[in-house]
Image (tube, rainbow, N blue to C red; front, side, top):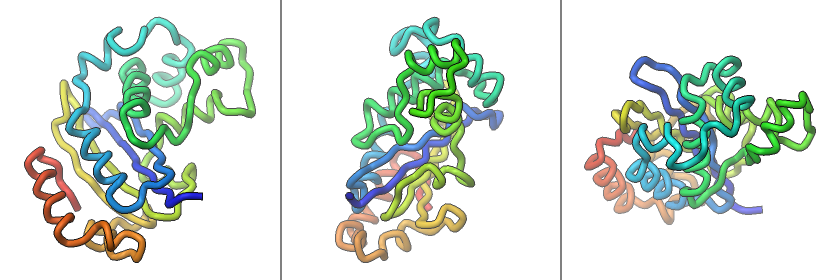
Length: 206
């Protein structure tokens, strides 16, 4: 049910180290919904200090998760990754595509329980290590994808929005808007205004 879309948020540092690759799900995400939410997230993106401190979450609570993220998924800053995952889920008008209960996941990892109901190693891989080549495999989609490629230092240094219906074939926003379900909402006037706002925040739009 719904006009389902997904947004891949891929964040790397200036040395190309992955900080997080995660997916947001929109049950009714067609038209302007996902695009405006992505813009809002980038405009309000937290600073590195806020994400890597106790301001959002106690970073001492989940040593098993943090060890797995760092050693198995090569996530350089696991505390930052967890806090960013939570911030995105709490701030977005969509939701985390892979819902995680950190307490349950920590318990399962500590006790080596491979739960069949998420909150396990596979869930962590999907929730934190998604990329353009494989993220669609975790998605229930019928109205298109969006990708936000972010370079992050103390704050966002660079951001690019990309669009597709097939993740192996990126298309322009104009081509994305040609779909019959999108065209009424993503009309030329909106696209022009959207690109202007993005440009004012140094966001590149393909």
